[in-house]
Length: 329
Ligand code: NAP
Image 1 (cartoon, rainbow, N blue to C red):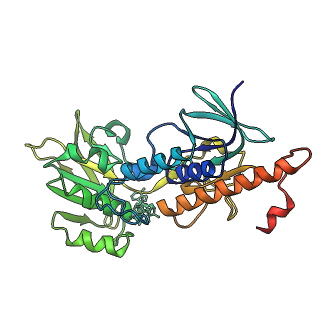
Image 2: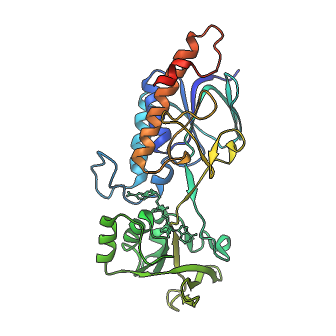
Image 3: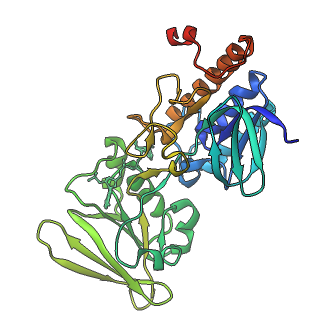
């Protein structure tokens, strides 16, 4: 007989790890299920400079995530590495069916985050991992001394372009509009960095090469003109890093949970439309997706799960309908 947890937390990013910390600290039997590396999107971040109390400049997101995971473990949150393939969320006992095992709990916190949006250019799949990357921290060092291109105009594109100047000879941001979306303070640093230039009003149409990425065809969206960027003969390859936003990892929950554009709808207490099921972090409908707001969501979800469990324990039938009293919170 498998253990019945009080709460299973799906995802080991800032939302999931914080939910684990709060759930463990609240005395719940908590399990965090993560299929890969902890940290979610902060694991792709070279420098997390706006997380409160993050006092080590230049420290990577991976290191911050490790500290979050240690803290959750210190409060007794269990861990397991598995990839969930199916879920059963109705009823008092929820089940998450993974490749390795089935996990059961009375509540579930979905903190599965989001994944990078593809560039959407021709031959992208062929060159992903062979010149195209979605993680500067992971792959930047492979492009030492080379010309590197960054797609996107948000905080991620701007910050990672700055990071890539440590390795690349030259970094060119390719942005589809004529101004960046990134925070002004980050833009100021981008425009002050002599190694960075910007190709405005431009999108990547296709990529090409042999074993490595050798050409990038860029289209000017205003004039329609095509420019083929070619790797130097001596270098033989280019780097193309994409930071064009994220898409929610919510496929498992389609048809089960209420959603908006693929993001899970919650109330301000992270409750979904199914009692005992919560969503936290970038996977839910919200305006501001930051590590700090994900962590806050995780804390709220765990506290709400604890209250829900306390409430259902008091009910004679231990039913799962949402208690009226909680609507006042
Ligand atoms: P984002 O803010 O959604 O920016 C995505 C960028 O990619 C935009 O500039 C967008 O162009 C462009 N884009 C989208 N689809 C595209 C396509 N198909 N082709 C070409 N360009 C495309 O994403 P993000 O920068 O990853 O940030 C996500 C969230 O995390 C944001 O809330 C951000 O503030 C936060 N974040 C914060 C920090 C920080 O505070 N240090 C660091 C990283 C991320 P348009 O501008 O034309 O829409």
